[in-house]
Length: 566
Image 1 (cartoon, rainbow, N blue to C red):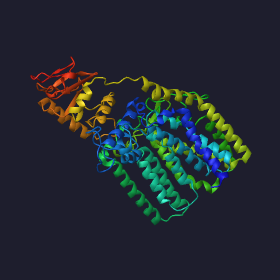
Image 2 (cartoon, helix red, strand yellow):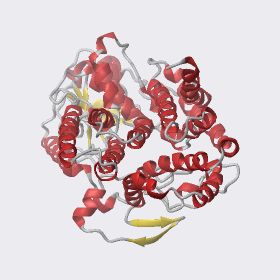
Image 3 (cartoon, one colour):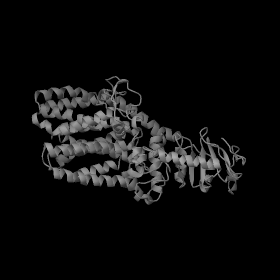
Image 4 (cartoon, rainbow, N blue to C red):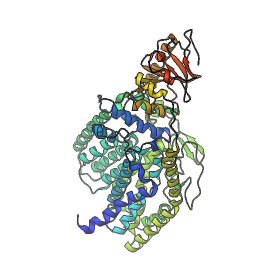
């Protein structure tokens, strides 16, 4: 690439890091700074899932994880810990510090790759540098991206969707099996929702090559599909997707529609727009159904429609039909069978149980809007630059990006304050939630920590989970994207029966959760009491030589004449 062509590409690529450093504190890039991840359960479990995974032995499949969550636990996939990085850094674990987090570096990488693939996509619209830089800036400024920084860091890889659109839009060629294989396997190693979206665009691309461009035969298409499918299934097995029953992936009517997109999603700023008011929404869809295009893009939409009316695309539009069909299908699934307009359900579509179980695999269905969202974000400026004279098109895009920045700036200022408060200020002020010396002594004697009951997962579990992982202990609770509920219920029932019968595991420290814990029997050397707000049952505690130094008034011998209800 010549210097004259490399310079604009470099400028475009730097737009991503520039926005990252304007929004977030550079301390997030420090691998040893992990406390910022404990401000809510989602990011905490992503770190804990990785932290435990790196310290336990390798299993088959390699992504399997059994120490964090135990009965709940399954693999690194279901803690949303970005399996691609978790597997890589587990190989390098001997060289890592005791506490190592890669989520800040991942966020920076996502912003950078968002800019890189936006630049590549802009090349499908025009070869003019100024419009390409503006189109790249529109993608980098997408308000969908920082909304995932609330704690869904794997889902910040929107560049996967951009890469899929780029592969679809490239000039007619054969099926690009290798490229699609790498992209789909990469998506599987990042997040399942992104895999769904990339897979949908891949099917659209195959349909285009076979029936629109006619650059691939049926035999070519079948062979490519089989090769990609085999590689994808192998990758999913490696990561640990199949360590829980496939039935656990769904949730039926209990979940589907709860986090859906709204019919107003594309023009509803919710908050943070300088020019447009927020519109009401059905509770629960505030984040997952968010798809605001921005005032700049919305202002360019009628100009693009007028340009298209003046110069219809003719037969050339056929090449985009498979992508449009897939984007509309994903949009329909995103809306769910309970179609919402503002804060009310317009109508519900009854679905057969089997169909409902299938679509309910995407519980947060509103995310599937992203393919159509980014397709529109590209299509609107593309129509303008292809149908208006170059100076006029560049002027329209320049006004559009100016309006977009002005419109979104209050949102970005508010997000900058929000992230600084939660990621920097609060961790510095947070006190140790487990100040008692009891925990350090207990960690020397017990091999696991058992919450009874284990479900629902206690909101304050993360401090004890970190203690367990740091000391090489197992713990039976954790937060997971999907659970094998039957497995958890069976383990809980057996544990409660053992407690009732007085069969305490001498290598386990119990954390009881009144009022739901069953009556239990305890021996004369067992201890029970409240430590740092947790009701603990410590088997054979008074048989340990070092117990007396940490015995507290609230931690005493359990009555031998149990059963006892705490």
